[in-house]
Length: 291
Image 1 (cartoon, helix red, strand yellow):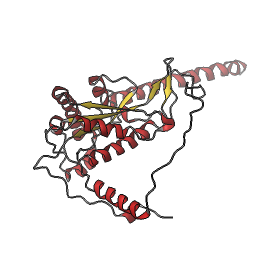
Image 2 (tube, one colour):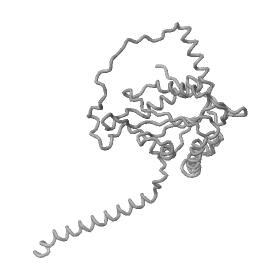
Image 3 (tube, one colour):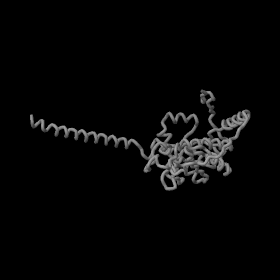
């Protein structure tokens, strides 16, 4: 009895070790299965679409470090334009009517567009507000036919996989009524492609990373202003978010690692035989709540 009592702690220790080995082996096998089930080369979630604002910068000291910005920015007097009520109503109505004509056009002509117009609409997009005035955007304008075709090849390859494997039946069926697929002829025919990259962080003069607050929201606002500027200039586009194409396009266009593709816009005039879906927009009472 005494011998059994003295050996009890040893038995317990051996049992604990065995349980630990079994659990570790089980978890290891599960991790292997999970790893095999994922295709790291073609993830469903596009890493380029993730906003890094809320995540600490890797290898940096964190949010407490001074970012080298001016402590005090000079303020100057400001006087805005002031219109009569009648003029305000007239201008707001005219602007709404202009933008209400905006349509997503997938059939674009190869007719040349003045380069100065492209410069001006991007200048306009650059007036957008941004978190802490970091202006975290890069607009890459592509007009070279060979480069446009390379972009088309990358996009169509990934889009075919998206439609056939990644997106699922519901998403694909929702798009059928709009007659869209992975063939993107407009990437060749449009005189310009504008690829909008968000800068998830910047660089300080000392080489350290600079936080770009709300970078995705800031760049998205700039994209909205760009769409309005294009419509104002009489140009048309279709908003394209090429899933899983970002890394390849970033390399092709020689953009740095801190830039992530957010949007791709083919820009030009509609073809003479262009068509668009007969869609309607929600009325005001469905999109505005007055409190």
